Length: 390
Image 1 (cartoon, rainbow, N blue to C red):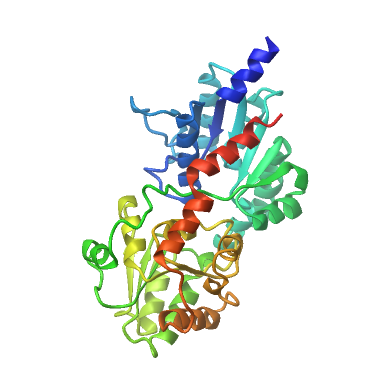
Image 2 (cartoon, rainbow, N blue to C red; image 1 turned 45 degrees about the vertical axis):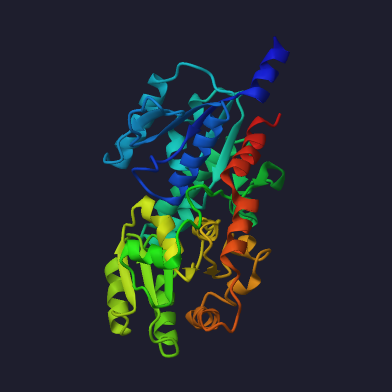
């Protein structure tokens, strides 16, 4: 009987995932990661259940079983109460492995998990510290997030997956997780959806973007840590040498009005367009329309999904030396990294790349690097190996 159990786990596993929201409805790096991972695992014939907040009714063709635990519209205390209640109510089988992605939504149900089923936590970032940077919160709130929610959740887990060594360091140093429990596996990209299928001109025509100007593109949540204020200042510098440069900023967030005012004050109204929310189907087109994608992050960039998406579309990416992004670009093209996070360093490297003083890798090389190293089909198998490790 024991051997048949082992055969089942190696051939097909029952995997319970607890995520955040449903990616097609609530876009975000974490949500996209969980969506892609669960889809790939289910396509591998694993039995996958994804629990989260705001999950839709499962479609007939959906490979992943979706379980909605609460409404995202509810206040946080009510959301957590519903998560526990609905999780208990919907348990009908015992999984082979439990995969957690967000400490807050995992915390209310930790004691409901079978004690002998391995729990793997995908660490997407230090929630408490990110909150401290972006939101004015009381120190007690930050302390509770860190000590009560995150640390207690992590103490219940057997293994961890991080997207970069940089985030492995944070997990080890700030949460005292031993290195022998941490597995570094980068994020993945859907190489069929993100691919160079259009010419630059065709992509620009489809989006209604300028046809004959050097174009920079970035897709970011509009918050302080992503460095868009530094990028705008850099734009004001380089427009003196490259007067027709144009920047498209996709995304929503709390500092949009602040950034728009900054752009106006810097005289960039003819050089910057705030695109707002960019529908997911337009994202690969936007990458292909640009000469260069820019990631000016200032802190807590655990991986940089935009980097591999853009490369898969054949477009080079300039990034700051923050988080996991250098781990992606250093082996490929160190010239695509700035010397620091300051606007002067961003401006210097942008100007060098756009004026041809520093050579950019070809579209073919960008694409091949992404396919060789970040194809979701390979990444999902690497993650699965951590899941089924005895």
